[in-house]
Length: 101
Image 1: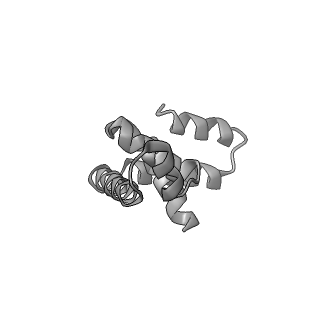
Image 2 (image 1 turned 90 degrees about the horizontal axis):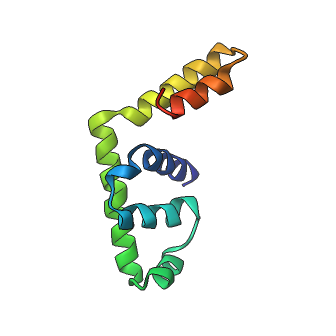
Image 3 (image 1 turned 60 degrees about the horizontal axis):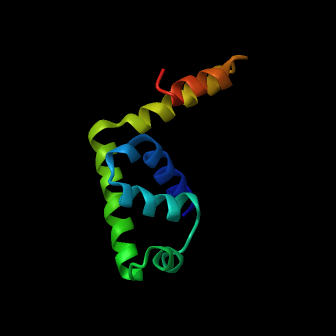
């Protein structure tokens, strides 16, 4: 489950701008803020099944974006290569990769 959370958080960082504000908000609350469906339901005024459906559809959209573009996988591969290189400026380079430079 933790691996899925990290993966969705990475995809959200990469593709969150392609989602609607509502989709992004629900995913951030669930995956980044670690709120339950019931807690998100209480905050948003949407039923618990409605929250589940929104998160499920939004998660599938992120996965579809990644399947089509592979950007997040390329970023992670670059990070792994840089970390393996063991250069003194690896943290700087990792930040550059994360910022799209």
